[in-house]
Length: 373
Image (cartoon, rainbow, N blue to C red; front, side, top):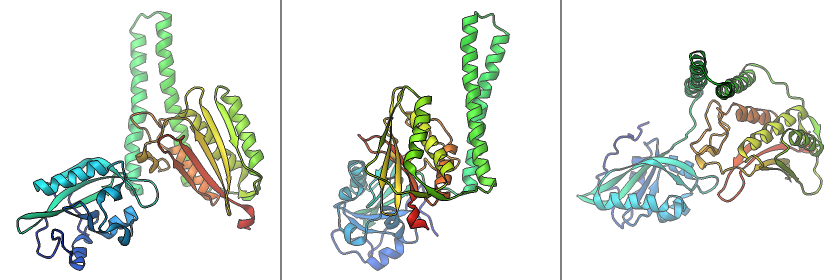
């Protein structure tokens, strides 16, 4: 399949493509944009969507009846409508190519917004610009396993090399310096922290490798969630006395079909993950919801919101979820990937939500026992 170049997008000059304020020949236009592997929008001079290809339809979720003829500003959502419309308008008025390298957050018909990059080129007919073509692609599109493993190897090398270099330099400094005892303790404390980073990462790596190379035995049985949750909650409360923990539930709950040991591990991991994200005296809530065929358990913390682009990859294998504002604990996602695997092995689902003004939450579901027999 021919892919739109990331460097240039050719101008479209044809008497049968886009005409200003006229009906477009949909059959010929469809042939043109369907050979492109990126998402394509065709926009007229009034910044209304004239047509799009299959890739764009699948990515954004808008049916033709609700999208074609609609102003772009009404489709992309408030996060990026002004910026995108300004670039489209500039392309049409000045006849220039614009690269959207910064990334735009576009609203989908359903689900979370998608972060995209792209390019905008004018559509020229008989020397006159009659519209624009917007080619865009998801910034964090899922990559194949080989790429992720290669990327992870590079990141792991950097992760281990950095603290080891610090430790080595500190040892050299201590051996060749005449420091007071207090100054030595400060340096030794930093060395111990760097050693702990290496230990934590190595432990997580071993966990993920075991999940990859071993058969994980899951023993499904009828499990009463409430006493199990209370037991794990009491354990974490004893370990983290400065944090406030709440359990929200409404009414009684049927038993679920699950492996109780693995459910405890999932809960414990999510609670400790929430504690890391919270302030020192933070608040963590476990919420239970009863649905027709499943029970949903959510772990909610009052830490910083999670950026939208991270929500799409927090459970990916071998992918870092650090960010510049430290809204996620520093990790290479081995723990969260493990949790996802354990949930799915019990026929459950797991996801993360974070909206401005709301506490972020990680949720997972388990099937009701009666539904699984």
